[in-house]
Amino acid sequence: AIQLTQSPSSLSASVGDRVTITCRASQGISSALAWYQQKPGKAPKLLIYDASSLESGVPSRFSGSGSGTDFTLTISSLQPEDFATYYCQQFNNYLSFTFGPGTKVDIK
Amino acid sequence: QVQLVQSGAEVKKPGASVKVSCKASGYTFTGYYMHWVRQAPGQGLEWMGWINPNSGGTNYAQKFQGWVTMTRDTSISTAYMELSRLRSDDTAVYYCARTMNWNYHYFDYWGQGTLVTVSS
Image (cartoon, one colour):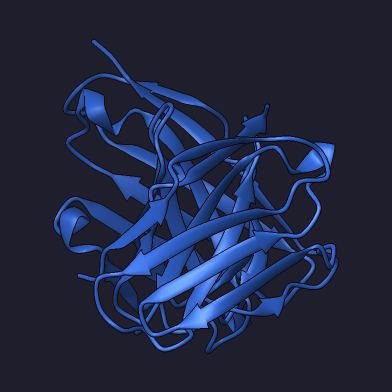
């Protein structure tokens, strides 16, 4: 099964900061990667799919890039509502799906 | 609007089974796969499997094969996930999640989650 790792596992940032989170797959997955945001007690929310496509209604400060094994989620200017945990998810075939371990973004 | 409404919290004893429901509305139930994902307290997301609501076909993560069963009732647009032989480490919030479309297995709508607590 394809494994996903994320770095960092947590980070502290201030409002207005540019934040970058990395997700690495154990084998190539083309662009079959999504990013989700999860706040405490809530279900995850889809932000990015196909590595770089912005989900409808998601602010443009969120962007994704990468292909193959290395992917990045960038928040261009961190807003108060962005403090949350972020997960990547791979979809390389219809049989096996994996989430990364998560990156917690909190207030510096 | 699309909604996935799950059944309420459950408390079960070790060795018992639990069946969680996920009622869909606002879209054609048979037009999108439904996945199940769980999250243990303070932990990350764990994919469990999917059901094709049109055919009833299923695909389970290897870890759960033999002890999870996913079914659906198209007449009431509801998907079910049953987990048997529960252990304490099955304590988690269980989510249903709809795929974006038939081919894109990214999850654009999620249920509110169902907390299953396994305790003697």
